[in-house]
Image (cartoon, rainbow, N blue to C red; front, side):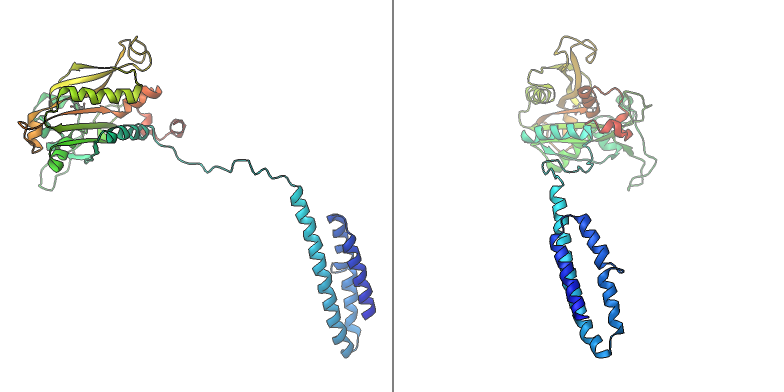
Length: 342
Ligand code: DAH
């Protein structure tokens, strides 16, 4: 029995040493090592031996089997590694991209403008979207029955404030941040604020109940209209390129005096006239002016000592012009086919 085991072991190891392919290895496995293979059959004979012999031969048989299996595993591994070596792995291929989200086009332009203004020493200001009638209108020179209220259709909120009055509105503009900021920081002050504003509008391609504005103000000693023009000219060049020009035309806003509309040369036709600028060569972008003394006073700033300018514009319109977007409702629509383009 011991001899038989030794002979079979020699035979199998010899075969394993010579095997040339994984197919042939499989054959060896079937012939010798599987349950009905020759090694298994031989080991079954052990049970017929006498008790003493069984013990001795059983041990030798186990050792023999372990030795064979060890060699078998080594050979098998060699073939598997060989197979991987042949499989071509192109390590220069780009990895699988995880689908990342997109920055909303409004946020893109917001970041661009915030970069410009912070580089000019402006700080970033914030104010509440649910605003009091006082900050949204009264402190900005728009009293209850002032006709200027009609310029902005307002969502009046059917809820009392902590003092028990109905005086809350969804802010219609970012201008209330002016008074809040002056109260908080005093003069001199340079700041901008970007945020959502709300108007009770019937929506269509150009009107939306929720949109974005940016507000800015600069208050200090001897701040003039010329300073405002300088800053707004920079904004135009940042938005539409270095050749962009600014022109000012008078416009009434209750919280500035004088008030003005800032218009930039059209980025598409450079002033010649085209579809984007409705053939005028100019794009009306920004409302601005020198801050009204009443507004400075409301913010706790002495208008005899300090002057300042303020400006505000809608970000949606800027983005629409820049990318040729023809429906303002896309901004809040959440349609990925729109959002994935930026
Ligand atoms: N708040 C104005 C609006 O919503 C825009 C505006 C005009 C802001 C003139 C200003 C300003 O700060 O000086 O139409």
